[in-house]
Image 1 (cartoon, rainbow, N blue to C red):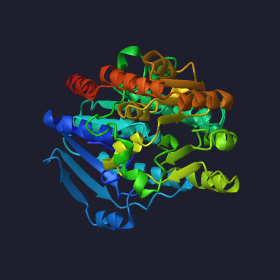
Image 2 (cartoon, helix red, strand yellow):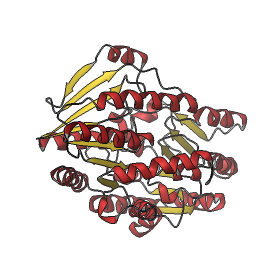
Image 3 (cartoon, one colour):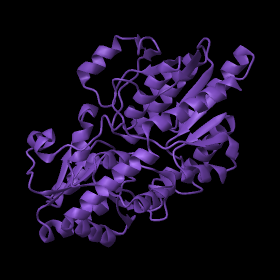
Length: 419
């Protein structure tokens, strides 16, 4: 049996974009005899006040027949203000450091890369536990987002700034102390190898989607149309995910403005939450964009309906993000047999993937005219849309298979622990 220490900023019943990955891995870990010990704060993201109050009283919980042990500690709720959110992350990390450093019988530490301080935290806990136990306690780091590159790409800071310098120090410290690093793409691997990480320390494992959860739902059976009074006869371009500052949604509004009269039956549906949602809603109202619809985050149980809502699924980002971001929603769009409409760096691994799979159309990130042209192509060619959707589903089964990826995770965990 392997006992894994996992220090996460979020935990069930919270809903985040990677919840399905954690759920699938947890089930595989349980089957392999791996016990996970979690130290997590009171739930805050994607939960009601009633659920938060309920879990304030639950300090200890066992799930998956005892293979997941959850220790909860009190923490103030997560707000929309970035500074408040950052302060909460720091407070959570401090609490997790002291609690994780006192954990008993840990064989391995595992951490994902959100927030970016999580890797620093686990590297520090690794040093503390290794000293206590008298031997190395290995640390596996799952790189889902490259910080501070992602902040630079989102124009939230610049290379050479104080934040960038601090981020690079955190990044280097994390990579140096991690025994193994799981990246989600070859682009990510190249990025960190260029920063001095040895290739033998890195394993590329793509994210995946569970096709038992995400599948095509016929429009007449899609519950979201009734719930939000959506006209089933219109053409929908659907974005689902974080509504933040790196998605370039302001440019999308510019495109929607130009298409409002030209293609009056096109609707842009944006589903999710995030730091930029409030300002985006204000901009939609001020510009009177009736062809842009904002919907709240939907429960994971309805994820098939979410990704089947659109005639195509949208991925959009600012220029320069492609090398440090691989949106896992791509797989959900493909699983729902919808063509991918991507406004993304054409030099990125994701763009090449979409083109090689013939699963959609890629417009270069930041190029509004290319995006509008791609929308025209998809709007006027129903047969091409259907073919792209089927191509994406086929590619998904070969490249982003849940079984294959989960086995790779298990292999990295067991090999690292046995060294």
